[in-house]
Image 1 (spheres, one colour):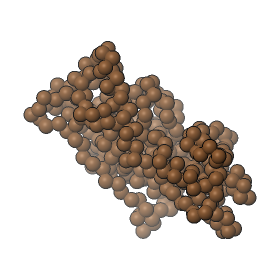
Image 2 (image 1 turned 90 degrees about the vertical axis):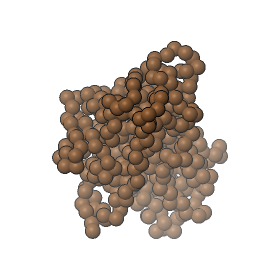
Image 3 (image 1 turned 120 degrees about the vertical axis):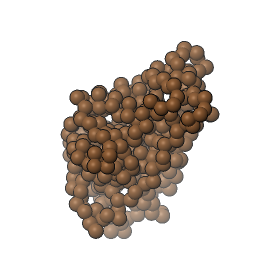
Length: 355
């Protein structure tokens, strides 16, 4: 069975299938259809959807709902993520399992420079699967997880086979036993998490955006601050192999590797089809997890070619990450646009010297 839907629809459906029980958001193009879909459909399955008075309140609602035991989700776009930024910092520091869809791009949106997990769908089918995966990663690592789309992926209608909307298993939340002495931040090791206890439940809890000790009390003790900050970093960076997600199309003997993410990956796919139709060998790597950068997989792909071409609707932000990881002798070329138009397959072929 085929279906004609857009990325926003796939994201909302994935959230419902992932067990989302709370949504709050504020209208902002091109993320508004997610808000409308969740307000229409979430109450039908016993969930709660709210349009907040603004973006700041909406993310605050989601944080409160998540810490009270709900599986929470929100969606916004470029200006909205700026307003989300303070509460994103609170969600990181408070280790809140939460999914945030940003129909733009993100990295240094909050103070502290903490690592974030960001998935980046290139197709409508990706929107569905990666949104479900985001809910699972949020539970696994107790942190906000971002799903980064763009206007084209979110709003363009596409025909997909029902079988292409592959569900991703979402784990249940680990909660602390009722009868235990519970310290919310007493990590067994820097890269391990503590089971959660919902606010309003059996344990006394504290929640703060400031650095805190194992009991949740604000502290100025350097050793305890170091312990907390190391945990917020290591719980993600030490488990990157669980987070990395790419779509690799590696051709043996290809000297050129095309690297992309998001909507530009569609143009890369067509450029590969054209080049191979001419008898030219070329490989492609689509990054479906963009932060942390999938270092191991990217380095393996780079080692098999002599020329990397990075196609992105940016001024070289991804290219610089590839240059950092590429062998010293490798040529790295950027193909980008900043004029609001999409990169064409022909531009990619020209940048790769395959025209």
